[in-house]
Length: 243
Image 1 (cartoon, rainbow, N blue to C red):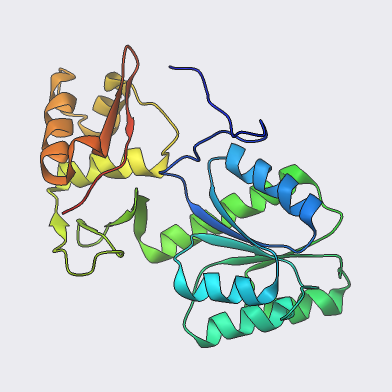
Image 2: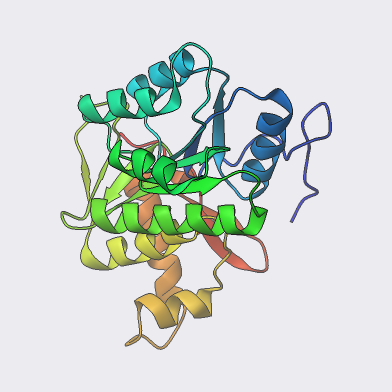
């Protein structure tokens, strides 16, 4: 694997992982926002930062996110007001409220406004990351879809859709193609050996060449960048140009 590159200020891996889940951070304290952004990028998230409630509201309404971290005491629009407006507009992105207001009544208010979770400041970093992982798992289970680059894999229809290009027809996958892509998309950072993919997706097959064959099928349908070959190690999810 090549050496990791970093942003110009040396703070975070650069460019951000193009296959990671999209996270919206709405936080007005610059130092905390910078620390959290660095933390989330290192965990594989693609992060947008909104420094006030108005920007956070706009981002949440116009961009698609897999999860959001929302402060309460924000300039322009208070955090729970932002959350309520998202929910009234049909935005179902799972939200973790991260606030210095940590009394039971504050937590109840946050959950009643539509938050899936509420964590008080100061917080433990590992607990925050674990809660975000739990939110993502529940969200993906509920949505029955997985992010595949800019597209999404619908696990029920076995189709890959590109929400950014609704004019493009969905790409239908066979059962085994869908199973292979599901394994890769479920852990987009992980490199899977051919033997591991053989066991997970093709338990009845004897030779790992069948993995190579189905990787070829996915690339033919979704584009060559759909699956990355990691020389000497195996395969991982890439960035498919659908359509």
